[in-house]
Amino acid sequence: MMALSNSISNTPTLAQDPDKFQVLYSASEYREYLIQAIRGAKTRIYLVALYLEDDEAGREIFTELYLAKQKNPALDIAVCVDWHRAQRGLIGAEHSDGNSVMYREFRKKHEFAVPVYGVPVSGREVFGVLHLKGFIVDDAVIYSGASLNNVYLGYNGRYRFDRYHVIENPQLAESMALFVTQDMITNPAVNDLSLSEKPITKDIKSEIRQFRGTLNQSQYQFSPEVASADQVSISPLVGVGKRRNKLNKKINQLLASAQDEIFICTPYFNFPKSVAKEIKKALKRGVKVNIVVGDKTANDFYISPEETFKTIGGLPYLYEMNLRRFAKANEAHIASRKLSVHLWKHNDNSFHLKGIWIDKRYMLLTGNNLNPRAWKLDLENALLVQDHYHHLNDKFEKEVANILEHTQLVCTYKQLEKIENYPTPVQRLIKKITRVRADRVLKQLL
Image 1 (cartoon, rainbow, N blue to C red):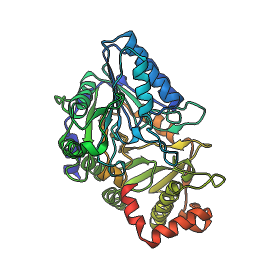
Image 2 (spheres, rainbow, N blue to C red):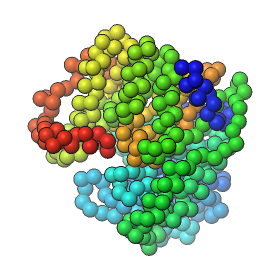
Image 3 (spheres, rainbow, N blue to C red):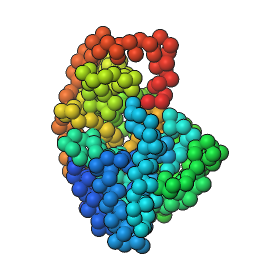
Image 4 (cartoon, helix red, strand yellow):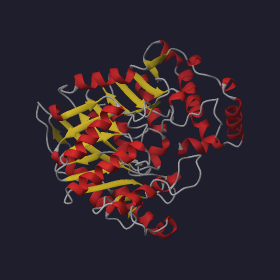
């Protein structure tokens, strides 16, 4: 245990003033903060997200970026989104060129352009996407798992709940900005989607393969600092793929180091084998484990029984099946309160929140869903915070209380629905994929 703790403590860090570490508590607060940050930017704005949607909230953010650029042409602005996701419509919708149409439209209407770089982490979306998080505005990092659209930004009354943090730190901002400029947008595989002329995926397959190989070796560059007793430490981490993934390794080390408590959030209950193994070992050695997961109706793929069913709507039920099996296997730990499973549900809003707290000393801010897809396919990052003197305790306890506000404690696995109670189209789908053993493959892709 001591060796594991040392491996975390020896992680290269940056010193962080705890007074310049801010927690936001809602999608609407996050949206307002982001808009004001864009308006007040002096030198640079880098937004990295899975997607910037062509809807009211997406257009609002994009408009703010263009207004800032026209007002100050010297302002360095770049947006990075997933290459594949930006060039298709929503799942289940008619075929379209996706959000890239909006990017081209804005460019044609303005004198000074805002480039939107499509980042192809893999040759096909199903085998890996840009899941990197973090907006850099001047010397601040705005970190959230949220993408940019109506529901993530709480635009029309509905919201997708996430975590939202603002960290003012010139060294951290510079390190993350360098990753964007040097490790991503200068690569031949990455192209500006706002231009009318751009290659198709087939034409850059070789570049994409080389790019993924380069990303596999990449890490955040910075000069390490030692935090004083009145500071906290922060480490930016990045990883992609199954091999040599330093982020995955660090997550497992965090879980293995827990002595008192693990608090873990994930929107999709489908832990990688190594994470499930570390949680099992933690329970065995007497660590209190809290897991917060979205109810199936709070999943972003959930389709109400009153609506027309689509195959994608089966996903929330597969996750609930995973959770029910886990709860049943750990019924004794649930009964003894060594394991607490909290189901999040708030009206018709959805849950997209992820992160880890260990012993109130280590906190992981991340967009990593803690599932096999994040572990093997997507480009992920995280910020590891070490708070050995408990400077951030009040802020994180308030955040945890905010997360738990709309949760229900699972007292027994029997609270979770059985397959027999699912809507008929869902039962048919599950029986079909189980019969052909496709569920094993799906678990690695979801």
